[in-house]
Image: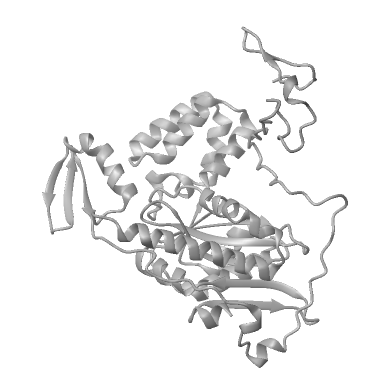
Length: 388
C-alpha cells in the first residue's frame, strides 16, 4: 500500500522457508529524492528495540538537513542485531540510494555494523560516533571533566597542529586514554584527519533522537510500526515544507542565525569573490573556498495508505501469509526504558506532587501536604526516606 499511494517507494519483506517473518525494509520515494538532491552525504545508523507483541529491533538510517534537523531516510525491522540482519538492511539501503559520492556512514563501533558497511558500501567511509567513543573512554579510564573537554576539542579542530596539541594535553592527563582513542584511528573520529567531509555530524545521536521521536510506534505490531512512522514522516515533511516556503532568504533559518553570530569574527577575514555564490576566504596563511549555492529540501510528499477496507491489494500480495517469527521471550516483564550505554549517566524522574525523586505524580503514594521542606542549607527534609 505504501508503494501504491507513494509511487517508486521501496519496500521489502523477507521470510524463512516456513513463511515466518524475518526482515522488513521500507524507504519512501520522497526521502530518497531529497537525500540524493539536497542532503549532505552523511548517514547515521542505529537500532532500537521494539516493544510490541513480537520481539525484534528497528533499524534506522537518518541524515541531517540544511536546517540541522533530522532527515529520515530508511527503516527496517529484524529479529536482532546480527551480522546477517545488518547486512540485509544495508543491502536494501544500498539498492534504494545507489552509489553515493563521498558517502560517510556514522555509527557506533559494533562489529556487525562495521562488517556490514565494509561489505555493502565498500566505497564509503565509516566514521565512529564520538559520543560512544567518549563514553567508552571515560567509562574505562575515569570520568575526568578535563579529559572530556580536551577530547571534544580534539574532535572539532580543523588543523593538524591544533589536534596534536590537544592529544599531547590528553596524554599528559591519562596516557592510557590517549592510547585508546589513538588505536581507534584518528581518521575515524577527528575532523583534522577525516578523509571525507562529515560536516557537523560527528555522532549517531540523530539516529537515537529519531528512535525517541517514534518511541510510541515501537509499542505496536510491525504493520502498525510502519504506518505510525509513515504518519510521523508525513507530518514532518508538511511542517518543514511549509516553513521553507515562508523563508525570505536563500539560506535556512539555522544557517542564517549561525552566520549572524559569526559575523563579528568574519570581519577580520579577507574575502575574494569567485562567482556570485562562491568566494575565496583567507585567514592569515590559511585559505578556503566557500560555496553558498542554495539547495531545496522537503519538496517531496508522503501520502497515507487509506483505510484497509478501501485497499486495492494485488492478489500476489494478498495471498501471502506471514507467520510471526519464533522469538525467545526473556523471563519477567518486558523492559520499557532504554538501557543506557556504557558510561552514560541515568537521570531520575521528579514527582510534581511531593517533589521527591524516583517516581512521578501518577505513582506517588505521598499526600500533597507531606511535601519535603527545604532547609536553609539547601537539603530537603521529609517524612519519607526519599531525601533529595
